[in-house]
Length: 79
Image (tube, rainbow, N blue to C red; front, side, top):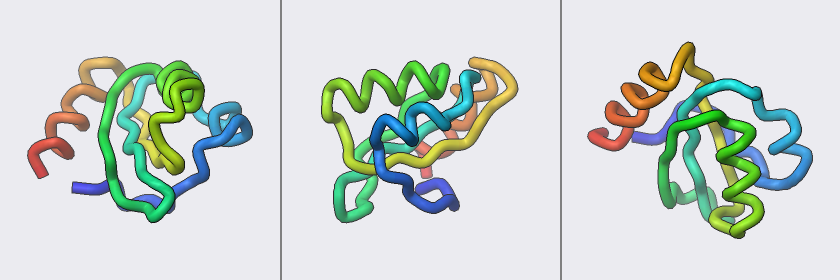
């Protein structure tokens, strides 16, 4: 199940604006189709995705802890 948030271009500006806290993130291709989900410290995870060219778009949901982020990931991976 996709996050109910607008896509953002995965670029340096977006990575810089990402919170430096745990969360769930969704990666998308240039057409806005979901290609994967992940959980972790948002800014760090998005830096890595940008460096490796893993996706063109991203959206995220901040979480209170790593445990919370992993629960969100499980919910979206099952959906």
